[in-house]
Image 1 (cartoon, rainbow, N blue to C red):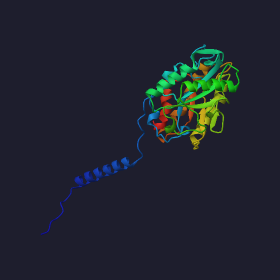
Image 2 (cartoon, rainbow, N blue to C red):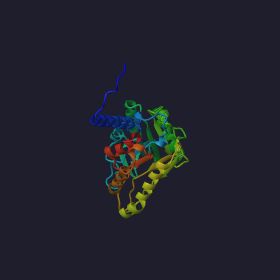
Image 3 (cartoon, rainbow, N blue to C red):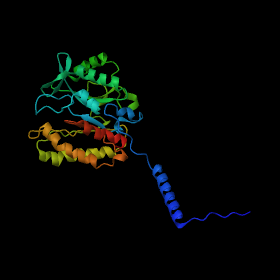
Image 4 (tube, rainbow, N blue to C red):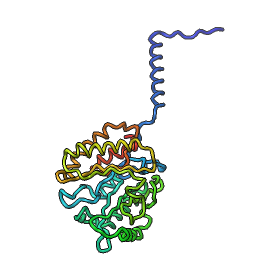
Length: 303
């Protein structure tokens, strides 16, 4: 007994061919690289990052003169309090300490910022206690006092004793998993332990004395963009790039400078191939906003 294959009309054949092509296309699409990961909330974004990642190979939003909320146009550099910065996703803190009467007071130049170093540590500890997957990178330097580095270091050591285990003071750039729940110290004073500010593991752009908008356009922004380009091209997990977008000068105060450079930074970010997850390193800014912070840390997720 023989059987013959059923005949297929031209319309049926065309439809089958089209469905086959669509199925092949669908299989091809699923074979492509995975889409960008969902971008986490600002309070917990580092918790979603591979613990093996070096801090040098991440994009970390930061603030310049983190606690400088007071003093008027010449000294104010931020609108958001430290807790609000942390909740938004800021992970680099620039902490300036005046040694006075046996304690460290937070200053911007001569202006006391109505907060002490112990307050800063309490706020960091409270944040990390509720978000243990996060880590903070903190630059500490002496500001508006002239005690010796040895004395400044002794004052800092007293805080270390009162906040045991909070600081990570290794001399090399750590992997994220090594420092979750802790503050990585960037020591901008020879009396302090920790990763050396300006040492062999850091690459810093901080040309801050910019007197006019013309200098910002002709000098500051080209320096910033070139340094961001260098961070993107780098591969060394032991070289931490820090690019300060902040500046101030005789004719261009912090708010004006931030208003001028932020659109340039946003334009730079908009031109990136975000799904490729470019690494910009650490980017401290003045007058940060939650959406600008998110646009930076989202790079770690291809978003």
